[in-house]
Amino acid sequence: MNITLNNKPESFETSSLTVTELLELKKYTYKMIVVKINNRLIEPSDYETATINDGDNVMVIHFFAGG
Amino acid sequence: MTFEQIKDKLKDKNIGIAGCGGLGSNCAVALARVGVGNLIIADFDIIEESNLNRQYFFFNQIGMPKAIALKENINRINPNTNVIEHDIFLTEELIGEIYKDCDIIVEAFDKAEMKQMILKAVHKHFPEKALVMGMGLAGWGDNHLMQTNNYGNIFVCGDELNEVSDESPPLAPRVGIVSNMMANLILELLLGTNEYQKHNR
Figure 1 (cartoon, each protein chain N blue to C red):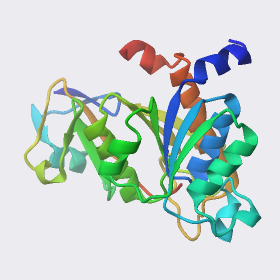
Figure 2: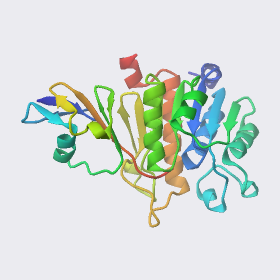
Figure 3: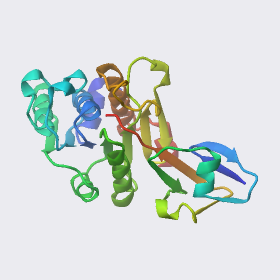
Figure 4: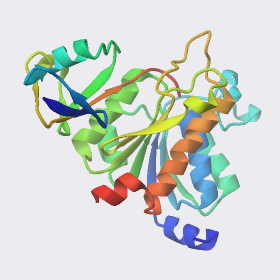
C-alpha cells in the first residue's frame, strides 16, 4: 500500500498496518506523540487496533521539552 | 505590501499565545511590533532570574507573574496592541474558552505534556484553527537545522531534534530564532501568503 506519512509518500508491502505496527516499522520511539489518520486523532489505547490503509494520510507528531 | 497596508490588515487580528516564557514572550513582542491588534496571552508562572537568558523580561520584573509583566512590556512597545492577559494554568477546557475568538493559536509551552495537551485541545475545540508550535530550540549553533513543518492545520517551527537538558539549555539566540520563525509564519498566514493555506482554503 501507499500512504502519505508526515507529508511524504511511503510504500509498505502489506495492505494495511495498525498504528503500533507502523510505529515499530518506522522505529518511532518518541515517548510523547500524537497520531492522526486522515485528520482523525487516534487515542493511544487504539494504537493496537486502528488500521492504516492504502491512500491514508498519516501524521505522527512528536513532542519534547523546550520553550 | 507597504508597512501601512500590513498594519491595516493586522489591526483586527487576534492571536492566542499559550505560555509567556521564551517562545511566548518573544513571539508576542514580534507580533506587537508589526501591529497585530489583539493578543490573548496566558501563563501561570512568575519570572525568575534564570529566565532572563532568553525571555522578554527585565531584571526589575523578577517575581512578577509572566502574563502581567509581558502585557506591561508590550504596552511599552506598542500601546495600539490590545493585550488580554490571563495569569492562569491552562487546561484543555480553559483553552477552549479563552482562545475561542482567536484567528491563530500559538503553542509556547516548555513541557512536552503541555505541547501534547494543547494539540489535543485545539483538535477538540477548534479543528479549523491554525496551531503554530515550537519544537527543538535547545543549545546553540546549527542554524541550518531550523525549519518549519506542516501537519495539516498544525505548523511546527524548530529543529524537531534538540531537547532541552542540563547540558543543552534553552538560550536567547535559538529560542529567539524559533519564536521569530513562529511570528514570521503567523504573518504569512494572516497576510494570506502562506502556500499551504493558499492550496487548502
